[in-house]
Image 1 (cartoon, one colour):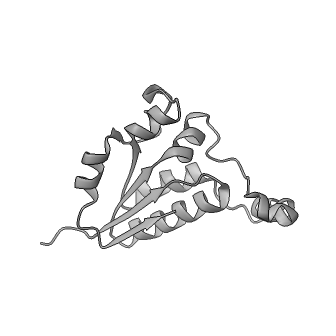
Image 2 (image 1 turned 180 degrees about the vertical axis):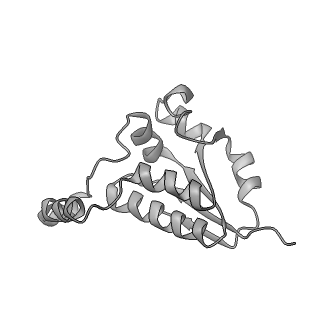
Amino acid sequence: MSPKPKFVIFAHNATYDKLHQVATLGMTASAMGKNVIVVLLFWTIKKLAEDRIDQIDFPPEYAASADEVARLLQQKKVPKISEMFRDAKHVGTFRLIACSAGLEYMGVESAAVENNVDEVMGLPAILSLTAGAETTLFI
């Protein structure tokens, strides 16, 4: 039996719109039987460490419609980012990996994220883990 195809997302940008895409793409790929690896970098690590992963925020260029979109998300009961990450683990293979350099550069102690990630790894280990991926995204 051949191994599951790897679906890798390098998650750098931590605004809600970007994290929502990470979560929905990851959950969908997991449900489709792919081995999903989400690598948290810089800002996603910081937001996770500060317990703000579910915060609905948008980049400044979308400020004019941010309140309306936030209202619609709540009205339509769109799941929180943390819920989608959890659900992705229940439907298939989904791993959250925090980059150790990102922790250091963002001034975050590993204890601040260890309960919310599967592992903290350095870039050499991350690149080895993600080698040969069928799909690789940088969001």
